Amino acid sequence: MPEPHPDPDRAWVIAARNGDALAFEQLYRRHHRRIYALCLRLSGGKGQAEDHTQEVFVRAWQKLAQYRGEAQFASWLHRLAINLVLDQQRRQRWWHKLVPLSEQPEPQAAGPEDHGIDPLLPSLPTRPRQVFVLFAIEGYSHKEVGQLLGISEGASKAHYHRARQQLKEMLQ
Image 1 (cartoon, rainbow, N blue to C red):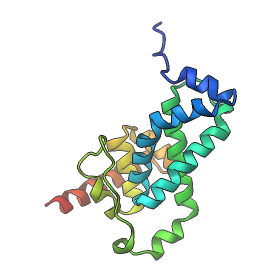
Image 2 (cartoon, one colour):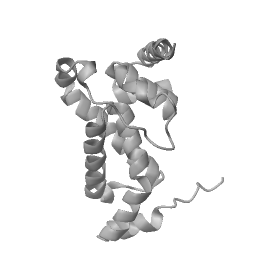
Image 3 (tube, rainbow, N blue to C red):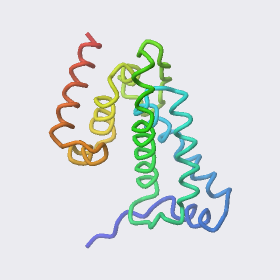
């Protein structure tokens, strides 16, 4: 059985677990752009994405002892970010109903991972945007998306189809 790919962050994680703040800073430097891009796509707003990114790394520092190393650190951090953003959105769902889309902040370009449709994502309703980002951009299966969002696999497919249709209309 082939061994899993070694985790390039392993040494930094071990040092950070032992209280080395500089090692954790290295982890932050390696991963903050991708985490920010993910938070931006899921939340649809620059300020929210900045807040979520900061909170992800605060929680990562607090939960580092819980990281078992079964997956690469980047995957663990990625999942932590998704869970945090989705949890925040569940708790603050009322805000999205009160603030019209036209008044929500525009996202900035996410950098090298920009897929050309990022500026359009904030225009999508929350659930279709979440499904689209997780399925089309992040590569999760519809089953995994359903589990993350607490919806059925069929609902994930329906939201994805809706998001694609809306994006297609925006692009025309």
